[in-house]
Length: 326
Image (tube, rainbow, N blue to C red; front, side, top):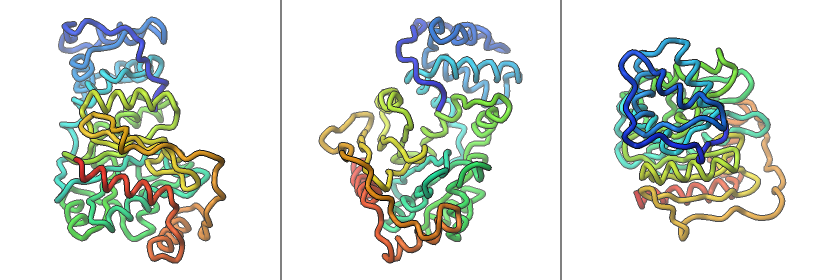
């Protein structure tokens, strides 16, 4: 995620003009005034700015200026919606056989096992087409791509491979470089600038497959509100939760709140409150938390040798029920 959202930033008039061809200076002038002085773009302006960025029309200086300005200001839900208006049409076309569940996996595991592949495997076992997308590797963390490879499910390299994997009843992991190369290029700015940018938020919100149910996770409480506003603004069907180390999977030690959004509407009746009390004892991880060890633990859970953590089983049940509403 980038810096905390800025819901109070003064928006420009809805009729404010788009920047002329060849420059985004009018946009940078508004969003680059610092945390307290910046003004927000309209949805149309945000879409125009992001389209130019993704299509390679900006200089390196403009790209860096945009990334740092938004890092300081924070995105409003309307700006995120506008950015996504430009991001979605540039995604690799995928068509799932039935309603898919999409899991954005961009953080990986640092202290706990990465259980995003377990969530994906459990859903696939129920006949759900699952798309997991993210980076292939992270020098400081264990990525979902590495765990899937250890499970014998290496990343797919094309839409045809994804469709074949779904036809075989298996979950799909696709690198963001394949799913959305221009968004991957925006993510790569982190290596140059040293900080995350709006691309990281957009990657975690990427639908991936038309009509899919998304799992949207946040790490900081303030994002629960801004992301809920985004889901409402874009009429999304999604499950919103506080993820585990930034991954879209419930903490195996204690169930987080699971918020259902159906066509942008929060369902209080179907949502699940967070489990109270202290964290449960850490479940047994006989293989450790590296990719191979995590894969061994997941196989034991999938074949019944070890129990599936109750919070993840509850998340699976919620996603199956939410998918029926989509």
